[in-house]
Amino acid sequence: MTDNLDLRIDDLVENPTARIPVCLVLDTSGSMMGKPIRELNSGIELFFRAIKEDEVARYAAEIAVVTFGGRVQQILDFGPVEKQQVLILTADGGTPMGEAVDLALRLLEDRKSEYSAVGIDYYQPWMVLMTDGDSTDNISMASQRTRELVENRKLTVFPIGVGSSANLNTLSQFSPGNDPLRLRELNFKQFFEWLSKSVNMISQSDPGKKMKVPDTKGWTL
Image 1: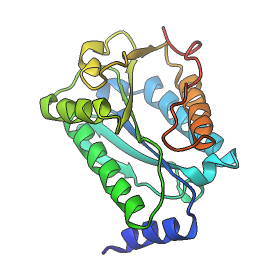
Image 2 (image 1 turned 45 degrees about the vertical axis):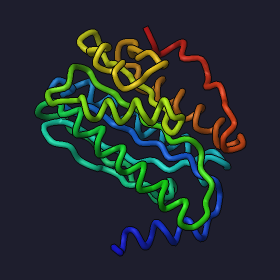
Image 3 (image 1 turned 120 degrees about the vertical axis):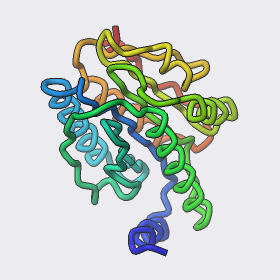
Image 4 (image 1 turned 135 degrees about the vertical axis):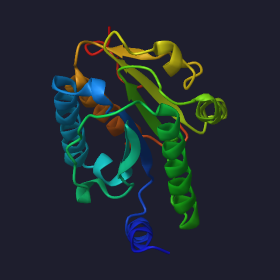
């Protein structure tokens, strides 16, 4: 067992609050260079700050970050939000979306297993998939796995297209029954503000209870 895993398990034992695991799967390919990546970084910073300031969500929410830009990277692992440091993302390379989603699903499954191992209840996991283009690798296996989890009510996916070049048809393959949304201009801050409010609402409900998230008006086209 690695030191990192030991720390994650210790936190679950010390804080038995029901968890809501959220994995951000973010496109950091070359087309996100410049203002888009700067706005994305600002939005992520706002998101973490809002979660940390909520008295319930700060103990319930666990955020992991996977990026895909040239190569797939796990930027942040699940753990106590108050102990997490937000990294500055940079843009470069292609868009290996399929590989990134595969990694995100593994991280979510591993974390659920850790919850179960120590008797921690948890809410349905969330995956936010955000891209400004189209995948440069094969997504068939990753999208099939995602659809199966969604259809079995074991995962909620929020597919977000950034700008006019985002392929919503590709994103729709990951989200049966939940149409992809297109971000208005570069309103990352408004999106992450909405996401933090949604996480806060869910964290104050009973695990397994179906909740309606806030209206998306203001950041979608």
